[in-house]
Length: 391
Image (tube, rainbow, N blue to C red):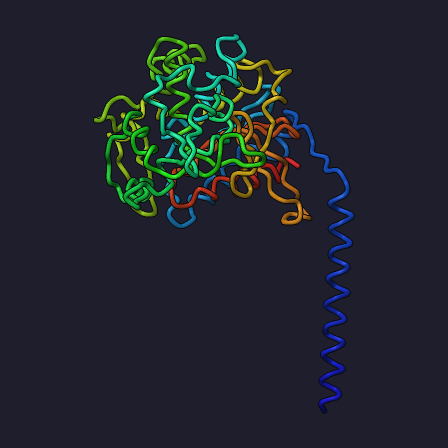
């Protein structure tokens, strides 16, 4: 009896090993081969996706727990066709909070100033800020690195600075926890700098292979924009919206504004007017306006199209996200999707499930939101399903 058990165990182990080797062989062959994705034409958009299919995908996501509304806009790069669908408490023209996609707007302005030779990415921030403001901003292991921080470090999240939103403050609290709990409070830039000076940085500026996502970086970039242009960052942004004809996009400046879709955190709604107004760069927009901006970005409005590859200096921030020079990349490991590989998406996302991404391999743009702070990954599930339909 014991011998039979031993033999059966050996057989089982042998089968597991063989199955494992077979799977590894299959994956190794698949992983070595180059993926080819179709450049999507107008006919393919209509045939493979179509309004009816997109409507179904968007309405299905609203059926998920705590997703009360969603909107997604899909466009072919040749401008031949745009599709948009919305469901639940969001319609096609609904204005919503874009969250951290505002970083792509700030980066776009910085890159435009760089392309116009009005600043250099190698510039130390000490060139733009008074010494007393930056002194002690980045004190790491007994050394002050504040004067070593460059604009390039800020735009690529390689400064090592702590994030005043998601990192623990000196009092042990996290601002993100308080905001998600609905505790509204103003955080103007002087308060941000004051609190960041009390926090521990993650690493020295520009340390090889290191990146740490931090809202602090783009707030400092806003100050650089103000110094170079001579105008408040909210005015610079509003001027940009007019240039691009983003008629339904604006910077939060009114604490009584209730014209946009309320942010959801699980089943609750969050109202944070004091916080939004205090930053001077939090933005309300629509999926259609986001599409206009996204296409402008990747077609050279801010930085020459032929030089966009210069921005692809990727560092991993947290899987599956990477950060370049002002742009974010979403890339799923191939081993996780051996049968349905997902092409890279470049652009930006926000903490409320807002997305604005370009898919270079397919020449497709996708914008939208699921407007749910607690389930941001749902937006990427929808985008992946849209891309799978188009393959």
